Length: 350
Image (tube, rainbow, N blue to C red; front, top):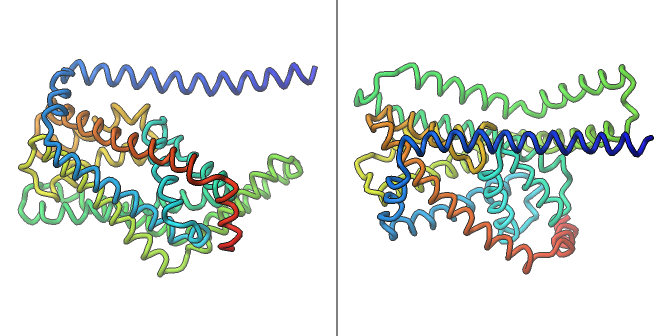
């Protein structure tokens, strides 16, 4: 009887997981089909085919720099500082690839898995690092967008003054949450733990595991709560996003869209960046990113059809970059870095 119940439980879990994936795939297919039917695939293919390959290669080099800066940012965390740069770079590359292709940012789990497999880092450590990194990503996006909007407002290229105030308020709110993360996280965990104990679930094995992870998350947040570390995280996050915008700008120029200034590209592509940063992206990010791209470029006077076509072409180039680097990273991890060697390095570092 218990086996049957276990099978049923496993079956329900499997069905639920499969149904979520199927729904994501169906939504992706419908959205992509509608956008491609509107734009025409040949337009997208021509943008890719006639791209300036020298500029595309330059964009690829910039994309590698993005990953380099991400490693530098991860090294700001005390728990990850002992992992060497060359052993961290392929992990960051694979994490970025899985995050970009899996729906609803479920690829974030890849970082937690890879850090645990190759360097023995606990699950809570990976979760805590990701939580802070994503929060500082939003702070960096707000800073970049504010800096890009100021010249636009001065030159009266845009009249939506309210947009810059909303961006500043959003950035300040996320920054405040980041700086006080340890306090509100520990308070939240204490309240949840009290409730769990009151309803008699405190002794369950899986509950204890979850709260151990939560404690590890709190430890990461506390270690990263000092002002100097927060400043370094903000600076590296801003550099990461500025380089991502440079990749966008260079790819746009490779496709013949060279009339936009760098700050205009930041304004136009932040919508697409947000759809990719929030857990709303579909399979490969297709559809949602293009809608954000269309909205941003429409604000600069670009026809919606042209904005979507350019968004698809640029998106495909970036996914090709990510796939190319992910394949190389997988080979490097498989051949050059075994789990045993990674954990040995960790013990030496400790």
